Amino acid sequence: MRASRNGGDNPAMLEDSIKAAARALSGAGQVMAFTGAGVSAESGVATFRGAGGLWEGQPVEQVATPEAFRRDPLRVWRFYEARRVQASTVRPNPAHETLARWQRRFPAFCLATQNVDGLHQAAGSREVLELHGGLWRVRCTACDRQREDRTVPLPELPPRCSACGAIERPDIVWFGEVLPTDILSAAAQAAAKAEVFVVVGTSAVVYPAAGLVEIAASAGATIIEVNPAASALAHLADIVLRGPAGELLPRIDATLEVS
Ligand SMILES: [Zn+2]
Image 1 (cartoon, protein in one colour):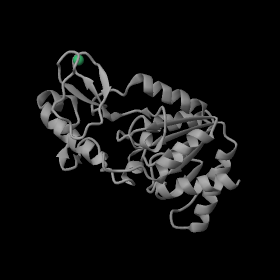
Image 2 (cartoon, helix red, strand yellow):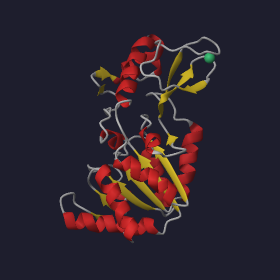
Image 3 (tube, helix red, strand yellow):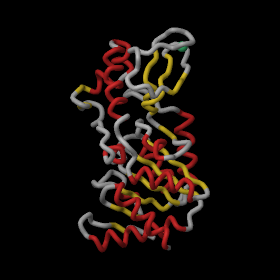
């Protein structure tokens, strides 16, 4: 099967692509989904624009780098506190809910995400591979102890480690930091085994998204891309669906149910 693509404005072609995606998924034993900021944006989470850009009006270098944190931990924490407050007000959308359902449906299902907001877990997904860390975890800068903390707002900024007293940082992968190798390697292993790989809501220009898609494609997976805009990985995709994930994933799911 090769290249079923809707142009974005043709309902009949979109319907064909939805059917093609449902066909690819219907017999699959190993499925992997990889999600990016677009899925969160559909729930109302503010998205960032990458290094060199602004993030909610702040230069990224001043709020999302290890240097920024060393220089002014309070400023960085105020920024993340604002993100935590905002994330605590949003809810999973039908894309998150569909992916949570697919975890129960397929014999083996792996979900990896670039998002840090915890919306996949809120929708019921388990063992989510959070490649960029998580907004609801903090980590000690001295003894590396990690803990979950969903308190909004935090009683003290910056929070301190109860074991050693040092300040804690958000357990987020900042610009200039390496991705957690155990999580990345689990994602790469799942990508290599996937029969169907669904990329959702990411332009895939940021490492490692493109790399995971390449691993899956070269291992023979059917690649399904669900994204409102054209992306850097469209040339690798077998099936491209242009539109909001919160609308398209439930339509694929409904087609799966009757097939
Ligand atoms: Zn500590």
